[in-house]
Length: 419
Image: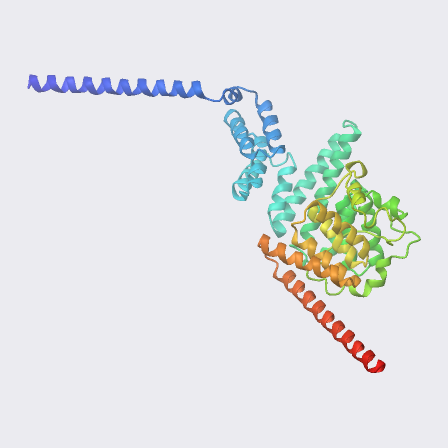
């Protein structure tokens, strides 16, 4: 037995020694990893939270979303529950098309700080549907209103204007919910009108609010009011228009719109893609604007535009111009959109449709065929638009065949008369 105990003791000693050796190797490996670690990453771990947050926001602005999330995680490792870092990370996740974890972070921000910071409610409102979206946006607006009271007499004019812009944008987002998800709700249109008026109280020149009001008046079959709001909206960003066409802000002038001759056709047949937006033009007063590629580039000069709405909003503006019979202006705007991005099927379709309404069959066919090409290449899922394109192309082909047949008959009649 003493021999057995002695062997067991030696076995334990060897086992303990091996454990110590493994621990030493692990420590050495960790030291090596630390030596080879990115110096910037090491430095970041010891930076103040505010500095890391600034770096995360910069990374987000520069579309370095993975780096942005890493920096946010470093903030959260030092300051658990930091809602600024959580919200910034949520935005990065949204950009990377990961809405579920983004929503979870934003909801956690609401839980941790329900009455501070409106932006999380704005984002949740945009991610939600129906009543849930409206509730989130309304909560955000109430926070913005409370913040505004606190800012009075303290904030600079620039800060107040920036805050007013945020409030106006929030009202526009809420109105969008009533125009879409809650459009069947009783009095939804009246709610939208009231929300847009509130938005204009905070920002009288808010492009989105003015354009939304134009859309509402189109739906109410009130084209003159729609024109007024649409032209006011366009004058805020399409700066060349006012000087080029001699119109005042409300769109009143001495022009007779060339597009008015086509009014009868403008509001029919466009239901598949017509929405709202754009502007007025007679197409005659200024040759420097219409049909000149160089001048189209000038129209995009940042010095001539204080604010340019998102691409989709400008598409909606073109749709509204078409519905209001402002075909020449619609074509000008569509030309600008194509120059900016010629791989958007809907813009080519709208151009082809507008040219069809003007009777320019050959140019219309070219645009519609281009729309089909982009549709296939982009694997778009808009069967109703594709159907309308095919219908227009078939109609144009039939008209061309009829015209050729008529010309052939006229030639035959002429030959008989000469004989």
